[in-house]
Image (cartoon, rainbow, N blue to C red; front, side, top):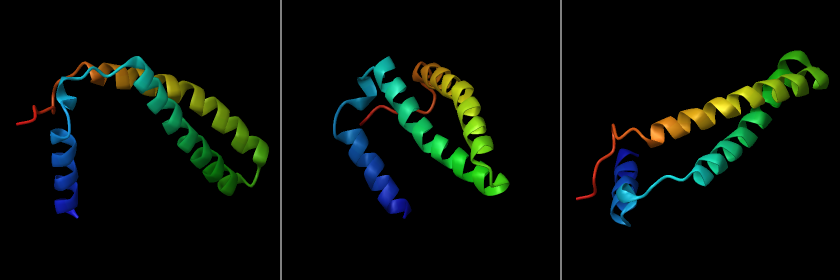
Length: 90
């Protein structure tokens, strides 16, 4: 499994100059939205299975996903400016 991960990493790093590209706000927003859609579904399912109440699950899903979407976007934008852990392609 690790060999596959290493091969994929090598391919991504060597298939273009991704290390010298700028991460745009549009990309961060798109990633935040798609991530949130997955989490919304998971939140609803877990709360529904725990409570058996659709109304409670929907309420929790809506409230938690508003503040966590904002937090995720802020976190993504902060990390876009941090060079730690990035390596230049050789």
